[in-house]
Length: 141
Picture 1 (cartoon, rainbow, N blue to C red):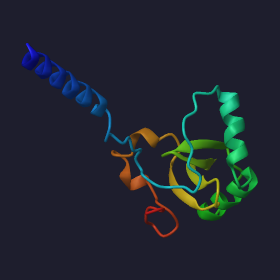
Picture 2: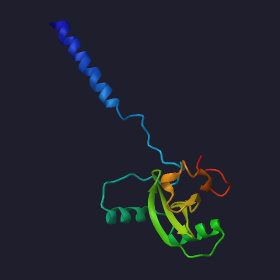
Picture 3: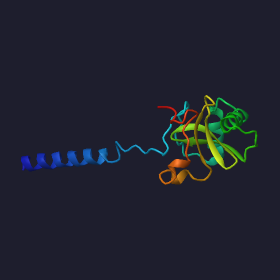
């Protein structure tokens, strides 16, 4: 009986260990992958509260983000959208100008990525429409 009980406890311990490991090691990465300077986490807040929390973390203004995007795109066109967002776990300004969405690091003002606006779900199919930083390579690596 003692051996059976020990075997049962051992099996239970192994089962709990396996259960605890489920989900570990799985790192969800967004495509394209890039890094910013201000890490953020999902906080489970309402949109308004989250927007205020993100705004407090940003080190550059929306106007500075727009200027960075305009310079990157070599245009003086006005943006259709400027919003803070959590991309790849980092705080970025999302600036949409002329059908292009430019991700600007909310800490440094560096352009991290550019894509056709609305195409973020189709990165694998539309890799030729993406641009990674000013030198043509993905920034942050």
